[in-house]
Image 1 (tube, helix red, strand yellow):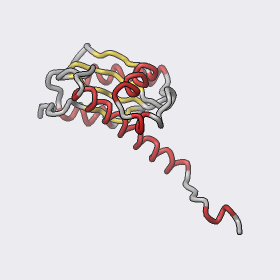
Image 2 (cartoon, rainbow, N blue to C red; image 1 turned 90 degrees about the horizontal axis):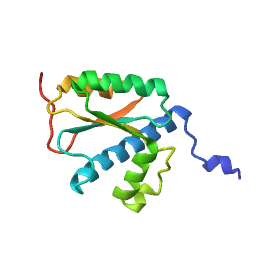
Image 3 (spheres, helix red, strand yellow; image 1 turned 60 degrees about the vertical axis):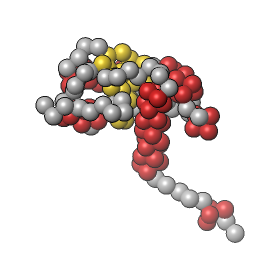
Image 4 (cartoon, one colour; image 1 turned 180 degrees about the vertical axis):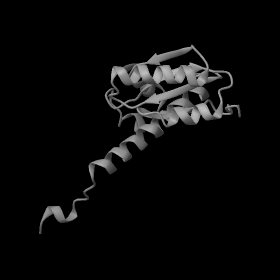
Length: 143
C-alpha cells in the first residue's frame, strides 16, 4: 500500500490562498485584540496589512496609495518584526505559535478620521495588500 494514496495534495495556488486567508485572520485578530486590550490601535486608526515579503517598491506604492486614498499624511510603517512582536503579545499562544517573523504581515497604521468607503475598498484591492481593518464600531463615510 502506497503512502501517496493517503496524501492530500493541493496546488501551490490553493496553498497560497489558504496561507493568505490565515494571515488575514491573524491580522484581523491583531487589530481587534489591540483595541480591546487598550493596545496600539486608537480610535480612527486604520491598519493596512501588507503581504509578507513585499518589496520596497511595493511598500512605497502602498504607502502612497494609502495616504492619498485616506486623505492623510499620518501613516506609520510597522515592520514584520514589530508586528510579530505585537502578535506574540496580543494573541493566544495557540494562535501565535503558528507565526514566524517572516510569515507575519507588516502594516501601515494611518489616522484618518472619516475615510471614504470607496477608499477602503480600493486599498483592499491594491496589489500586496492582504486586507484593511478598521477599529470596531468605526465606519467609513459615504463620500
